[in-house]
Amino acid sequence: MHTSFGIYIHWPFCVSKCPYCDFNSHVREAIDVDLWQKSLLADLHNIHKFSKDKVVTSVFFGGGTPSLMPPKIAEALINEIHKLWQVDPQIEITLEANPNSVESQKFSDFSKAGINRVSIGVQSLRQKDLDFLGRKHSVTEAYKAIDIAGKEFNRFSFDLIYTRPNQTLQEWESELTEALAIGTSHLSLYQLTIEQGTPFNLAYHRGDFSMPDNDKSADFYELTNKIMQDRGIPAYEVSNYARPGQECRHNLTYWHYDDYLGIGPGAHSRISLDGHKHALRRHRSPELWLQHIRDNDKILENLKIIDPTLKAEEFFMMGLRLTKGITLDRVQQEFDKPVHDILKTTKIDALIQEGLMIIDDTSIYLTPAGLIRLNKILQFLFY
Ligand SMILES: C[S@@+](CC[C@H](N)C(=O)[O-])C[C@H]1O[C@@H](n2cnc3c(N)ncnc32)[C@H](O)[C@@H]1O
Ligand code: SF4
Image (cartoon, rainbow, N blue to C red; front, side, top):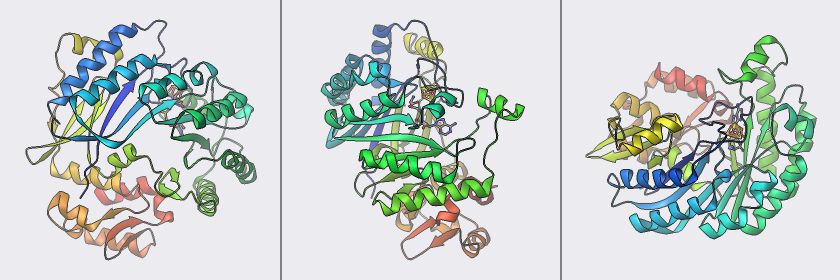
C-alpha cells in the first residue's frame, strides 16, 4: 500500500533562458518577492482543502530556478506546511539549485529554512559544453556548489546532460568517472533532448549541430547504466540513479502515481477524491497565475476527474519509467482488475517476445532495452 503524498512548489524565474529548455521558466527584470510569498502561501491554503487528512512525505521546490528565491520564502512555506498538514518525521524537502556562486552562498540559509536535499543543475564538467548549453556557471563554481551542498544538506544530487553534439563515448565515460569521484549517492543523467520551440530546435534544424542517431544514443545509455551499476548507484528510473535507499522520494510519488498537489504557475496536481483521481492545473503565465490568486478566481475550476482511459495511460506512463516497474498488487489496488484487463494481451505478448517487457509473479516492468524505447512503447500500448 502506497501512502506517500508530495507538495510541489514552482518558482518560475531564471537568470536567463537556456537554449535547450522548454520548462515553464521566465526571465524578469524585477520580481515583487513579498507578493510572491503572499501568493504562494495563499495557494497552499487553496490546495489544503483537498488533502486535509494527508501526511506530507515530501516537498519539492522546482523551477525555473528556485535557488534564486529568497530563503525566507522557502522558510515561510515550509512553516505553513507544518501548520496545515501532518508531516512525516522523515520528510524530504528538496530544492533545485543552479550552481552559480551567488546561489550556493545561500545554501546555508536554505538549510536553516528546512531544506534537507538539493538537486544541483551541474549539466557538464566541461567548460566548452557549459558554454554550448548556455549555462551561466563555470565548472569551478559547480565543484564549489557541490562541496557546499555536501556540508549543508543531508542529501544532494546533481544533474548532467549527455549525448551532447560531437561527444564521444570515451569523453562521456571520463566525464562521468570524474563526476562519480566527487562522491554522491544520487545522480540524474539526461540525454540531451531537442525540444520543440527552443532555440536549440531552430539551430539543430538549421544544421548548426548534429545529434547522435538512435543506435548511438542506445550505446550511450548502455554505457551509462553499466558504469553506474558497477559503482553501486544503479538506475532506478529511466534517467535517475541512486544507491539503494537514496532515491528521490518526491519523484517516486509521481512515478508510483500517488497523490501530490502543486502550487505556483503551471503546477500540476493529482489527487484522489470521492473514489476518483482528479487533475488540477494552474495557469503557466506567472502574471496570470498571480492575478488568479489575487482575485481568488479560476483557481479550482480546472479540477477535473481523470477518465479511466487517461488514468490507465498516466499510471503506466509513470510506473514503467521505474526499473522495478509496477507491482501487480498496485495495479489491482488502483483499478480493481488485473493488468491483462487493462492493457491488450496481444500488445503485452509482442513486447515480451521482443525482449522489451517482463511480467513475473509480482511485477510488470521494462527491460533496459525497453526503457530506452519507453516513449515508443507507450505509444504502442495506448494508441
Ligand atoms: C527544471 S530543469 C532545471 C533546474 C535548474 N533550473 C537547472 O537548470 O539546473 C531540471 C533538469 O532537466 C534537465 N533538462 C532540461 N531540459 C533538458 C533537455 N532539453 N534535454 C535534457 N535534459 C534537460 C536538466 O538537467 C535540468 O537540470
Ligand atoms: S534549464 Fe534551468 S536555468 Fe536553464 S532556463 Fe531551464 S529552468 Fe532555467
